[in-house]
Every structure is written in C-alpha cells, then in structure tokens.
Image (cartoon, rainbow, N blue to C red; front, side):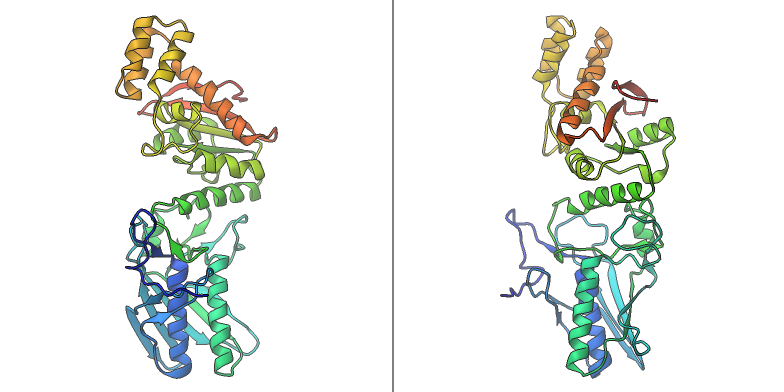
Length: 372
C-alpha cells in the first residue's frame, strides 16, 4: 500500500522535517522529462514511488522540450538535515537512444564519474548508485510500455555547481571525480540520521580493500588525521573520515577486514572511546571525569590530583593537570581505547593502534602494538 506524502508533511519522531535524496529528485525529474518527451506535456507536480511504497510529489523548477531532448529540474529539499546538497538543482535530460541500446546513464556537469574499484558502481560509470538507477529504470520501463516503445533511453543527470559542492564531501577520496554522487536507498533523508556519513566510511573501506591497502586510518578530525597520515605516509584513500562514528567504522571492518587500523584523535574523543563509547559526538556521549580520576589514582597520582580531575570542566583541563603532575593519562587512554576497539572488532584479522594528539596536532602518545 502506498502512502502519499509531501516534504512539509513528512516529519520524524523528533518533529524534524524529512527530505528527499538526490536519487529521488533525479527519478522525479527523469519521469517528468520522459513523460514530456513521449506525450508533449510535463506533469507538475510529478509523483514517484519510493522503494518502501511512499509516493511523494515534486514541483518542477525548470522544464524544456526541444525536439528530441526533454529536460526537467527539481530543487532538492533535504528537510531539516544539514545536507550539503540541500537546495541543489537536480536536472535530468532524456532522449531516445539507438534501437537495442537499452537504458543508458550519463554524467552531466556536476555529477561525478567513478574511477576506483570497490564502490557499488564500477569504474567508468557515472556515480549514480544502484537504488536510484533501479528507480529510474522502473520509471523508464513503465512509461515506455505505456506508450508502446522499446526502453532505449539515454538519461543524463547533472547538478549545477555539483563539482564545487563535491569538494565538501568524501567523493574525491573515494575516487569519484568531477562532481557529486546520486545517492539514496529509501529515497528519504532522515534528519541527523548520520546515515550518509557512515555510508561514506563503508565505501571508503571498500575502496581501500579493492586497492589492496593493508593499513587504513580512522581519525576524529582533520588535525589528528594530518598528523597520522604524515607519520605513516598513507595515501588519501587510506583515510576513512571516521569522525565521531568509531562504532560504524569498527563494525564494518569486522565484516570486511583490513590488516591494520590506526585510530587517531584528540584526548577528549579518545577518552570517550576508552570508556566504551562508540559514538563520540558531544551530544551523544560524555567524558566521565570520575573514570579519569580513578585512572589517575591507579597511575600513582595523589588524591589531590584525582579530586581536581573529578571536578574538572573539560578534558583539556584534565590533560593539563595530568601533564603538570607527570601522570601518563594519555598513554592509559590510548591503551584502553585500543582494547575497546579490539573488543568490538572481535577479530584477529585486524590489528589496532591508537594515536593521541593535542589540538595543534602534536603527538601525545601512541598505544602499544604500533608495529612500525
């Protein structure tokens, strides 16, 4: 049973407005363009069916029918998600292809091309993921059957300014050159679901494995990443943009192992990992200062130091207190973080080492098993 929804009606349990993936927008634009090519009229709004049966409607931002080429454009609405492609124009141009060529996808300006193996789309193809491809294929086949013609259709998807927007994504590291990807699995963007970020981590692992890499790096931020990448002389495709999602990285590596993983980050983030948190975002996990105070005692620190640590306001304050007292808290944090990571991995196929940096990128400590 389908459910008809519109962007301003689709909200999640927290009252945040859902939006639409680039794949949904590309599918709707393709349906509108092809309908006009076959009938002479653009449906506006145009409705599509999503993988789970919902039937959203999209207003057209632009349209043009010029002889054998039809074009329709839709402005992407990502809802309340801070999506880099929110407000982007997704354009589909369609035309009939030679008999027997089937449905062919082209990358127009602003849509990337795949250049590295390991992604769900092979090298040499436009970066249009499998689910959006399937959605567009179903639209084309249905419309062509309705009008009694063979589905020999060329679809070109483009995104003005897509190449500039792609520089704010992980596409360049994944070997997607020239623009953005057309993404989506459900067709719906759930605000702050972090699904796109974790998806990029997984694809990064796939690309690293396909390239035969034996050492990859997951870091909590750009400063620690730059330090670790230089230290180990790692290529860009070895850097997995872990961010706060240690759990997402480790769980995927458990099923898709690479021999060595370095996790690099600041003292605060890695303290949370050492305490067992696998989502290191400040809104979803907190540094436990009592835990740090106990560890300072175990390392021989005086009770006065432990009390000061327990009452500290920030992890940086704890770090300064420990350093002034000559207590190797960063070393303990690195070792405990490594143990937590290995526990989640549950695999002998991946060795883990931890690199702790300060805010300037200076190395504070490294865990044992840093087998250089």
